[in-house]
Image (cartoon, rainbow, N blue to C red; front, side, top):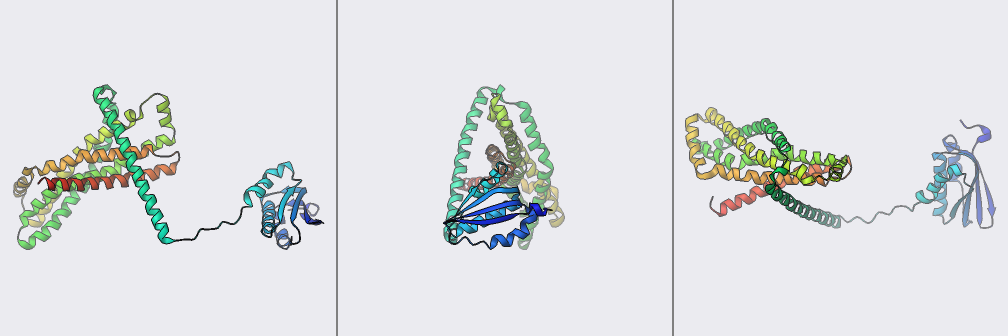
Length: 379
């Protein structure tokens, strides 16, 4: 508590068109309740300038400084010039902050136009997307150049890192990819059987299942799972290394970041995703075969014989061709987003999310282009 001898006080000393506002005592939180109504009642009208004399202030904390700030703002809004004088050295920084930094004019919000704001957001998003596309194409060129160098000098490829990435991307992804592909095969067979049963064409459920899984669903499901699991991991790992300044350390040590970090991940996913696609195809067909056996009574020999007629026309390879392209897209996007991470933790999460969304979008777009191309050439 503040003693009576140290209580806060003030006096007003008019000097022509200048009023000297002398404050003294302990301007602290304990005195705020008493000083608040007194400061509100001050009327500087009739004066052009007010000098706040702080020579007699014995103590000053944030609450006391805020009271002076509010009083000064009120006087300034009425056209009075405020000047603090005789400020003790220990309080000078606080008063300087109040006088120069906090006495800002009220913020005026611009008029809100929803349609203009919509156009602005659309333009910014479009420009950002174009910038991302430009950066990704440039990154692709850099990686291609490094791959060409690695082909000429194979010893530059870091085999232990490549094997580790194949294990992380491929082997550790088998359970989730297999389970989801199995369930997709079950669902696909049930949906196809429900429609074909109305026409007495139950056996053609195998044809629909084979074409759907081998040409589309196998590669697509494997790519989406890898994009969500491994593509995001690429971004998070490289981004965390950038936040921890490990990338700077590698560069200072004379190491090539693309050679050390990007190529093992890219080659690893190029090897692992086609194998995962093949595994997803097998599990999807197994799920469909189980459904056909219990729901339609189609035995395994009949199922395999009908499936052979579908797969013999190159359907299997049309799906497998997509896997390396999807792998390259996921690897490039994940590594590119990781290198774009800023030096803060929030940026890691933001770019990791962007990597997953961008990779899945580009995978689906590439799949649509494959479908158009295959249809154009009659496959």
